Amino acid sequence: MSLKNTNISISPEKEMIQIDSELFQQLLLETINNTNINNKQQSRINMDAKALYKQHYGELSIQEKYSYDLSKAQLKASSRTSALLAGFAMVALVELQYTEQTPRPLLIILAVVTTLLVSVHLLALMMSTCLLPYIEANGCTKDSPHRRLHFYVELSWLFSTCIGLLLFLVEIGVIFFVKFDAVNYLPAAYITTLMLAPVFVLFLVFSYLIHKNRMRYSMERAHSKMDGIEKYVNSVENDPFERDILVDDSSQHFDRKDYGLSRSSSSHDYKNLSPESNNRSQNDFKSAKDIHIV
Image: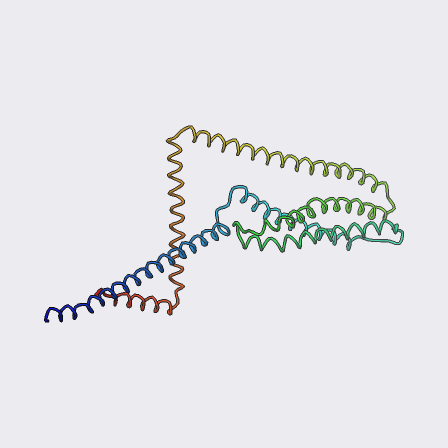
């Protein structure tokens, strides 16, 4: 009878041990699953941070840096040129002396040319003044606004250096006629206008040649870079030792970048933890310590 009683008394303890072990296994599995989910979320956050970094603050190529510097230089040049020529046209219009004998068509031509000249240069000045601080404040990054605003940069450059300068040459010819007509000596106006005509033609020819040579130089430079890259790739493919060194260096470089980015993102996430999340994590840790196998 004593043996039977002992067997009966031991069986509930075995059941308790089995129940506690099953509960512990369930808690352990839930903890492991939560840890895996958190790791996946953290890795996804790191990948998103890397993609965001590359999109906005990644390294620029040589061509992109050249485009940024060129846009900034164009805006600065158009701003200075437009301000100078627009001011000169207004001073010429105000300081010219007009008489009653001045032909009315000549005055109309002067007014039209001066209005067009000042309007074109003021438009170029407005665009360059508005765009230049915005581009310089953003800096030379992948999301620099000079890409999206490239049309306005080129338009400002066209107004200031092409259309504006041509109108300025026409303005000079009209001023010659107005000044020499006031003293009744039009032959001087014809002579200066004839001298100005070859300058006008040379201006057009030089503008075309400069643009053509600039485009040709850009194409030749691009072809030379491509040839150099192709020769380097062929030499690396033919030399296995140099290929292995290049692969090792590139992998170490990307590992350092990824490690620095992950450290910055993890430290940022740790700093942004709220007190409620810290208290919750501490309570979870305490409850995990209280679990014991019976």
